[in-house]
Every structure is written in C-alpha cells, then in structure tokens.
Amino acid sequence: MKKAILISSIIAANISLGMAQDTYQALTLSSDEPVLGTARYSGMAGAMSSFGGNASTLKDNPAGLGVYRKSDISLTPNLHIDNDGQVGMNINNFGIIINFGSSHNKSGYVTSSFGISYNRLRNFSSSTYTEGTHSVAVDSVTTKQKGYGNEFSTDHGSGEWDFSYGLNISNMVFLGVGVNAVSLHYTESTLFNDGQYGDEETSYDIDGNGWNVKAGVIVKPADFMRLNLAFQSPTWYSLNEDNIYPYYGSDANGSYMQQKEIDDIEYDLQTPLKFNGGVGFVIDKMAIIGIDYIYQDYTAMREKDDKGQFRNIKNDINKVMKATNTIKVGAEFQLGNGFALRGGLAYVTSPTKDLSRSYLLTKDEDHSVVLPKEATYYTLGFGYAGKSFYTDLAYIHKSQKEDFYEWMNHSDIKDPISQTENTNDIMLTLGLRF
Image (cartoon, rainbow, N blue to C red; front, top):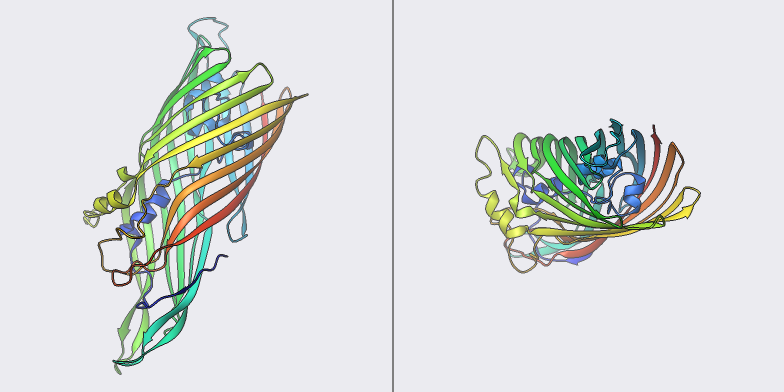
C-alpha cells in the first residue's frame, strides 16, 4: 500500500460528491484494459486484430471470425494481483466459435463463422493510502495540528459478451459484425480519519448493463501482410448506484454528530466511440508480428438522468478529459513441434489533462480523486498447439501512472501526489478445435 506523507493546512472534510455527478468515475467505467483476453492474445499484448482466429480478437475486430477454418471452444481463467498485493481470480475469456465449413471456392464466398465470446474488460481492484497532519481549530483564535489518514479503494470489474459473425471472401477479404452485451460492477470506498471526529466512510456501489455494436474488415494484400480496420459504437449503459456518505448535524446540546445519508440513483452513461486499425506481418512459418492502434476521445462521454442533474457535466468532461492513443506491438515465434514463444508491449496515453495548477471542478465540495495518466503493459507468453488441443500461458505487468488529489477544495488547491501503481495478471487458456 502506498503512503505519501503530507503536511497541509486544510478544512477536514471527506468525500461528498455523489457518483452520478462524478466526471472521474465516468472515465473509470468507460475505459478498459487493451491487453486482457486469452493467453495467446495477452501474450502478444493484444496486437492480434490483423490475424484473427482467436476468441479475444472479437472484442477488437469481429472480422477475425472469417479466418477460422474449424470450430473452436476455449476457456481462460486469470489470477489478478492488484497494487496492494491482493489476489483475485476471474475469467478473462470464454469462447465458442461455430465454423460452417469451407465451400472450396477460390473466389467469392469461402467460409464463415458465428462466435459467442465473453471477454473481461477491466479489473477495478486498487487501493491508495495517504496520511499527514493538518490544522484544526480549537477556538476562534487558536489551532492545533492533528494527524489524518485517508484510504481510497475500488473493486470488482466489467465484462462483455460478443455475439458476432464473420466471413471469408476469396481468402483475401474478411468481414465481421457483432452486437455485444456489457455489464459492470464497481465499488468505491473511502475511509477518512481527520484526527478529531474519528472515522468517516463514504462508499459507492454501481451495477449496470449496456450494449454496443462493432464492425470490421481484414484485408490480405500479400501473403506476408494483413491490414485491419474496425469500429465500435459507444456503449450505452443503464446504471444503478447506491451512495452512502456522512454529513454532520447537531443534537439538542448543539454538539456535532456524524450521520449517514443514502442515495439510490439511476442514470445513463454513454462511452466514447472506438476506432481500431493495424497491420500484421507473417514471416514464412516462423513468426508473426502485429501492430495495433486504438483511438478513443473521452470528451465524448455523456451522462444523463430523468431529473436533469447532468446539465453541467459536459463542461467538466471537456475541461478534464482528452483523447487517448493506444499502441500495441506483439510477436509470436514458432519453436517447433507445436510450441510457440510470445512477447509484447502496449502503451496508452493519458486520458486526463494536467490539473495541478489549472482547473478543478467548479463546484463547492471537498473530495478525493484519482486521475489516471499514461499506462504501459509488458507481456510474455508461451503456448502449445496440437491437431485439436491447445494450451497457452501468459503474464501481464501493468505500470499505471496516476495523480492523486487528496482534497479538491477551492480554498486549498494543492499539487497532486504523483504515483505509479503496478498490477500483474497470470492466465491460462485451454482450448479445443473440432
């Protein structure tokens, strides 16, 4: 658990902003991990959109279904180790691909496949802890220093079911389209002790479902080259959120006491469009090299509800968020006898602007915020493929830079705490072609 020792003079207040109006949580719910998937996909840092033939490529480009010549079923369990060393287990991918056989045509329609695939989009598990001292008023003229501690943690994840169809035209053009169902469960908790009133806990619990559509194409201009282009619509979420947060009142004697207030909020979230393109190279039967690029503009996020509480959120999104560029590079080397070695690197630019000396929210509240900056993924993989059975193992190390704002209060604007959170994933795929 990371600790940052700060000395500041502030008004002790805890998080008081409801999630339904939190621009930063909209970013958390809208983003995903670009390298999570089957062990083969993850071992190549997800740079497989130009090759297809893998259940996780459906989340990038459904045209990859046109590459299949056999039916396929696969399962990928995953161990996720968060920045605090906590270990959790989930399913990265489950896929069933039904191939309709080859027509043996050399031109025109050759074959097609229908795929149902579940892909884990993101693990929310994370924890940040800060502590320090601040000034507390004793009376109208004197103050004293009190210690404080603030623990900020998130948990659970999001996933997507892809229902896609792809076809092969003349072994040169592969087309695909998909309709996808997305679900998420996100929890956030802040435990704050100001050294005077004791522990104050704020928590948010969000459940939601959404959908999107995808379409893509893969072109084979030469035996050694593949090109791909894909589009994903926004995901349209319907979310339900429970908020529990403290506030202060007074009793008959005039003293302060901590109370709890609970909100149950329903609202809609629209994520950005996603554009994916890339190129793949085949080096004889010895190796493949993939390069993928993804563009998303997070200023396009939208939030709304029936009560009109989000009228001003768009201004905050425009001032805080920006577009991201993701580059994924991966390679697979054949070792002989069905064995293969893989490696990759992915880099995602920051989705948020630098707010340390410029803009904070134009609201009068105090709350903690974690703003993600650039992220780097390092991946390794190893696999075996027989005539029918195949298995793969992969490892992902993620290095995520963040800016942590303890209190975003207009009377006390501080520079953020810059930190790097490191997480790890280990996954195993078991698959069968038939």
